[in-house]
Amino acid sequence: MEKWARSLLLLTLSLLIIFASVAADDYVRPKPREALQFPWEQKSSSQPEQVHISLAGDKHMRVTWVTSDKSSPSFVEYGTSPGKYSYLGQGESTSYSYIMYRSGKIHHTVIGPLEADTLYYYRCGGEGPEFHLKTPPAHFPITFAVAGDLGQTGWTKSTLDHIDQCKYAVQLLPGDLSYADYMQHKWDTFGELVQPLASVRPWMVTQGNHEKENIPFIVDEFVSFNSRWKMPYEESGSNSNLYYSFEVAGVHAIMLGSYTDYDRYSDQYRWLKADLAKVDRERTPWLIVLFHVPWYNSNDAHQHEGDDMMAEMEPLLYASGVDIVFTGHVHAYERTKRVNNGKSDPCGPIHITIGDGGNREGLARKYKDPSPEWSVFREASFGHGELQMVNSSHALWTWHRNDDDEPTRSDEVWLNSLVNSGCVKKRHEEELRKMLLEP
Image (cartoon, rainbow, N blue to C red; front, side, top):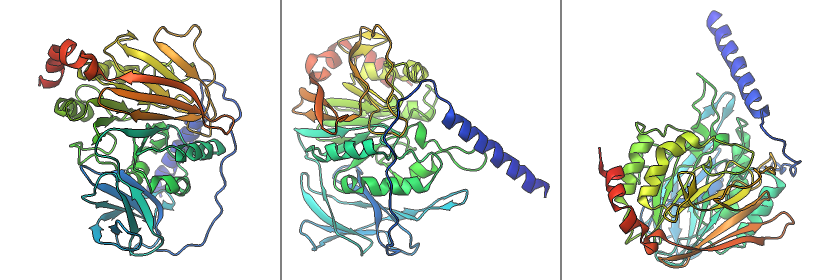
């Protein structure tokens, strides 16, 4: 009885901590759009749901889906013609429990090798509807869609509708996906919401604070995220799904974790050094990084939350000639000049905060006045970004506001790669060797 009472007390205290953290806020947000409603539908227990795909190493793709039938097989049939499946990929499955919630069977199956820039048709587990996917191109040009802090509101749907109009190859999401916030069924509804897009183009995501569903002594903090959104961490030499890298069409992309250890003695820091040391700028002239909490932020919201991570990791990114850093967390949009160590620097990365995908908490409208010298454009509106890598030296970045349900192009800039500018080979050669190759 005493053991049972102690467990009940721990659960009560944990729930109080949860509700207090959700309720706390530094700033006043305007009224957001209402949450989307998801009508319940009777489906076969073996019917694949929440289908999404992600890159899984060179010429391979991971297909993920959920079934309520625990005996459903984890294989994917695929081919280049509708209804004709010439290939079969065998996979794995997992599931998890969260207090009284029990997930369905979560399937992960890697398929390939796949041809670049090719349409494939596939079916999950031998039943259900046929899906199709488009593999990214092998060479420039390539377009990325970028949106953070999505959630499940009317604004989310507007953002997804606008992204669907974009001719992109890969979706990048720097954290805060479902806004489930401990309510596990919202992971299921989020999976259904994004399936029309995420089953066709690969979604590459990293974690945000709303993925950190921690109940001390009871539930691991990232069990939901890690179980449902498996990324190519093993393929990139990482030992954690919270940080990894991938390469596609001349771009090396690094996804970091703002909510896992990042100091210079951590596994993430050591992995980042090793990953940066392996980057070949001849093969991948563009180097981009994504994580959740911004380092350069002139909004009143979430000031200084990224300072510690910045102090540890910014020198690595600078020495390696990172071109662009994408973050979320702040529910607004902001673009900086090339910047490093708190000031403009022609050899530093451009930082873009894009935490305006459609979250349920609303927009962060208050900015510091006057704005810092490194801040170029800032606006508290919902929207998404498009990054078009035209060639090895030039890219076009556009941000599309959707406040009025129109995908208005509000910010636009042409970018030159740092490799093309000479920063990487000349100015940082000595620093790069020191930062990346020392034990």
